[in-house]
Length: 164
Image 1 (cartoon, rainbow, N blue to C red):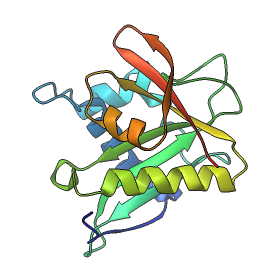
Image 2 (cartoon, helix red, strand yellow):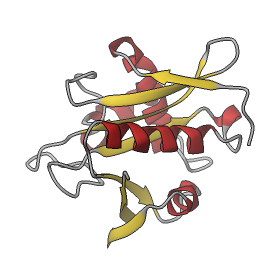
Image 3 (tube, rainbow, N blue to C red):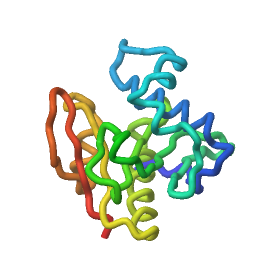
Image 4 (cartoon, one colour):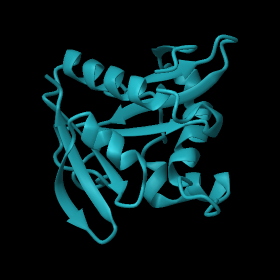
């Protein structure tokens, strides 16, 4: 696993970069790029970023040796009346992850995912959830890291993992 990066806790001033990573996550398909403003304005995506960093929000940012952010993973607690794509319950945080394309397949996503699961457990969350399209290559990473499918609808799967 490529290790020329480190990670740190996400802070309020990381909101713009988290937006960048949300756009990367939304545009995982080659050739299917939606503009930043379109992704961030869409109801299905803006809930993962608006008002960052609320009390219950947590995240990690991966940085390269020059201290440049290259990826991020974060979670939010979403209300039942405004659920996210991977919502399974009000007490289960939903995670979002994005990695800069030049840093994919170098262990950044796996490292962020493991760190965020550990952080969620340390914060007292027994489980963490996510949503992924079946064709997304990241689905294999989530399965390998212990996430299980709890719901399938259309082209998406909701996956959950225990944090301990």
